[in-house]
Image (cartoon, rainbow, N blue to C red; front, side, top):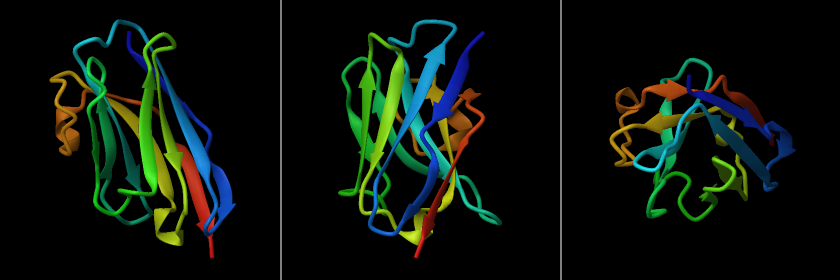
Length: 124
């Protein structure tokens, strides 16, 4: 059974940084991609960033490109999201997810496993 466990969320002032982690277990992910999505209150869940497990190709939403960096550690079966220059509009619950097609899609319906989420709050 695949399990995804996020950590690293918290409260930070605007301009600050946080690093999110997602530990994956239950099977190998060699042909998958993994991604971070986020959901703010009253809004739809949106794509943030994705990385392919095999080649490490990365994809970003325009709103975070240049500020956020997604990375992976194959040995630890983990992905990370380094978030710099945070803005109040980055406030959301952040989720990691598995894309079994390995494309790093921006479409959340192509992801079949999700973590429980970690809250990120950026104060102004």
